[in-house]
Length: 237
Ligand code: BJW
Ligand code: ZN
Image (cartoon, rainbow, N blue to C red; front, side, top):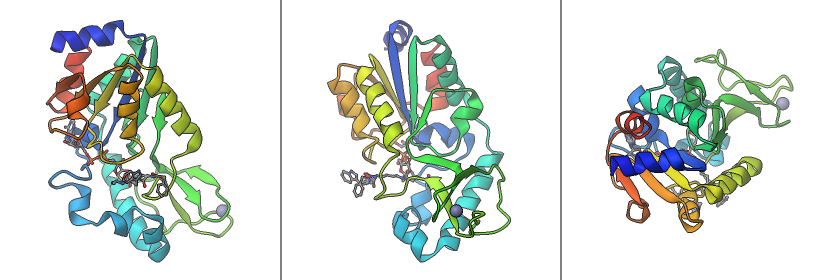
């Protein structure tokens, strides 16, 4: 099976990849829904919704500030590096990530669609101005825009739309792919998880890399039940 997946990746004209929190697990960044995941200690609705932010922006920011400091100390792992290498070899390649951590950029990937935003971007709640702020810890919480209003993390919360331009590109990449690789996601959160179905329905061979079974496991063509940092370097070798 390993050699069948390798052949697929070697001969594909167009590869699209969907990654989730699992690819950063071996960099020491907790996932959301696993044992010890972020949602085990915090309720999603208290932190990752516009309502939670409106209720208590400082509380939500403290959580994001803690995550920023954790991510700042982390390094991309062999899984991130393998995808950056695959991009260099493929004729057409799109990396769609649900992750906000920026580890794919740091590993050298370039065609990245961050469909759930970026934890290093801050967006003004009044004028919409966006800025990049790489400081692991912000001096004032919540941070403020030069216009005086508070800023929010530049991420996509539950009930919010994904950035339409990025989403369109993600759908296009998924439907044009001959190989669709889905890595380290529980495939529970929509519309991102729908890309797996879209790719399959459009004729792609779908390969899943995840140590656990997910709702898309039964429809994929190949499964590697292994951690991403171990499986991905083997798949591209
Ligand atoms: C390893 C590993 C290792 C471990 N190697 N793997 C249809 C039905 C029902 C509900 C909905 C629906 N369509 C939309 C909704 C609502 C909602 C939704 O999907 N809810 C479901 C939970 C039921 N979706 C939305 O609200 C989305 N917006 C939207 O639909 O807009 C239209 C709309 C507007 C208004 C009303 C209704 C609709 C937005 C979703 C935004 C998600 N945001 C978050 C937070 C981002 C910012 C932040 O990081 O703080 O995104 S939530 C969180 O979940 C984060 C993640 O990107 C996302 C996905 O999680 P992921 O990455 O899959 O992580 P885990 O933890 O779930 O899984 C980790 C996996 O890794 C596991 O499988 C492990 O086995 C594996 N793993 N170690 C490889 N070493
Ligand atoms: Zn502003």
